[in-house]
Length: 288
Image 1 (cartoon, rainbow, N blue to C red):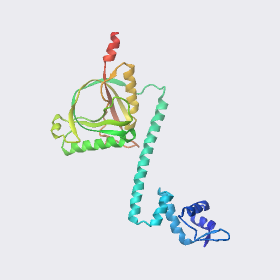
Image 2 (cartoon, rainbow, N blue to C red):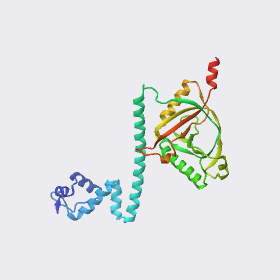
Image 3 (cartoon, rainbow, N blue to C red):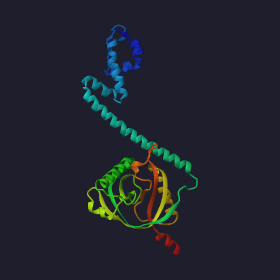
Image 4 (cartoon, one colour):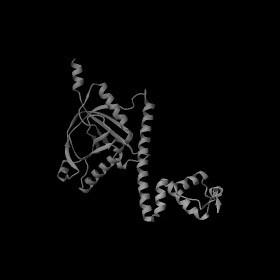
């Protein structure tokens, strides 16, 4: 048998952790001298210790490991638990990636404060077009990235299944009247021939998107998750020129389908951001 210090050196784990494992019942000493209180371990206990360490590094808590060792779970159940841990970790990574993107966006904002506005806003007109669309409520801003991909996947799958040739780019429409962070009414759409309306089937619908006689537009090139910057630029321009917002913001994908954009590390493309406006407020100001 080995004293606790010798076993600690052999196993490459601290004496403190061995005592902690003993307190939790994970790894009891093989023998405790009743006179000296010295703890002794056997070489045969190394496999159990290595299993504890391996499971702990895979993300299982010591309490979970205790139950697993006590039950002596089968490989199939261990595989199932590992799958659950993998899914949990994927969610954590996705949340941290969202946090990292927000930090980078904020840093970019700080760097650009006081600098000349890099986005040029122009006024355009948009005739009525037929679109195929699919719409949902996105629960949070963090969920926007993957949920808009799901919408676009469903939309393009329907177009391909019905052999419909798109007659224009895909677009996102945000049916909100104010800035919100939950339950964001979001639509993915693609311009199609009017004849496609005969093939509409839930959840895809085909309708005529009304003409927009006046649009404040801005072309943006870069990561799709940082479109808040040019949108903010358009909003400031609208306020500065005394216009009023007259419809939901649109995001036109000029560089192709979002799913086909290069990842470096996030999708980057060329977008035209459009916000319908009315000149009524501006005209009234001129008359006065």
